Image 1 (cartoon, rainbow, N blue to C red):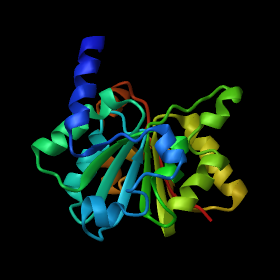
Image 2: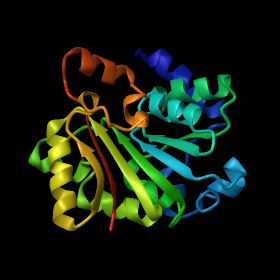
Image 3: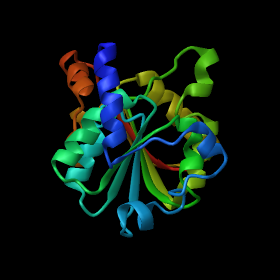
Image 4: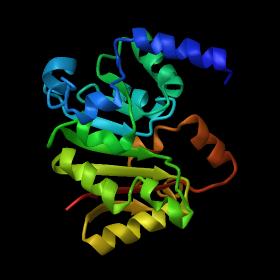
Length: 224
């Protein structure tokens, strides 16, 4: 994507009513008015709130919102030029149960209050295979603690990835720390019992992985 296109998208994001772009200082100072008030102030209803972390172009966030009008969805990503497409589509389709927040995922507990979130989706994250980069891995123990703070009791986390490494690493960590694994499969499209919300939505990159014959893995779990 050229720099002109990026700038254009950044400017459009500023005008989109479904895009929130808090500064790091605003978050760390706990001055984001929406924290703890997403249901009342932004969505103006009491429907469960679901996050997609590292939402990319927002394809999964938007499709989940289309299929689940009884829930609210928020895509999180630091790259606003990417989720511009999802935000624009949501506005064009008048999807009032969709929002996007431009921020780093490690600041998630400054965006949402305790027990404010019902579910978290992590779709095709960078597996961060090199040992020194484990601190950026979105299912490491530190990130799980962050998610636990904002999730409601019995709140669920979904991990969908093309990385066998990420799948195995996460399963090992969940078993080791005594978290509750609700469902796991190493190749969801070969399993007729896979949940429809997992196999029924495919991102642009996921379709490419499938064309190359890469298996897509999935884990649903609760953090104890």
